[in-house]
Image 1 (cartoon, rainbow, N blue to C red):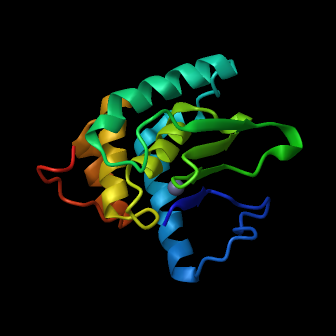
Image 2 (image 1 turned 90 degrees about the vertical axis):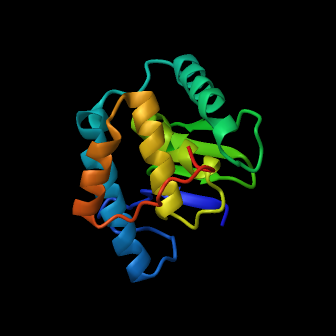
Image 3 (image 1 turned 90 degrees about the horizontal axis):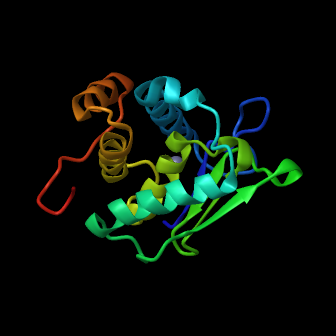
Length: 169
Ligand SMILES: [Zn+2]
């Protein structure tokens, strides 16, 4: 629990220096396929034009959504944008450090929502059902993607989604 390395792949597309077993890797690939299918063309939108715009949008999304969840901390997470050779092939979210590190060329809304979701649901082990539910809610609120669309694609991709309760948004 606490650290998620998202889409950290080498150029050959094989997960690099991350020890995950085959079943987890296969599930993650299905999950990313679902994520891309739901957000559609937004997965290819250009990154935010400036770091200031990235931080502003990130902060606004956090403040709108965090109160409905149980993150380890409620203050604004640290967002570290990595450039050039410091890039890591994706993004890493650490709930313990309350930090998201993300490559500069990945600073688009869909990626940032994916990482914010990890900090909002720190008890979920990886890309589990509670996390999937949180992501669906973020997509609905922040990108106006209908919940029914996300759920239909989840079942097509074999992604498990928790059932909302009174305690989940
Ligand atoms: Zn992830």
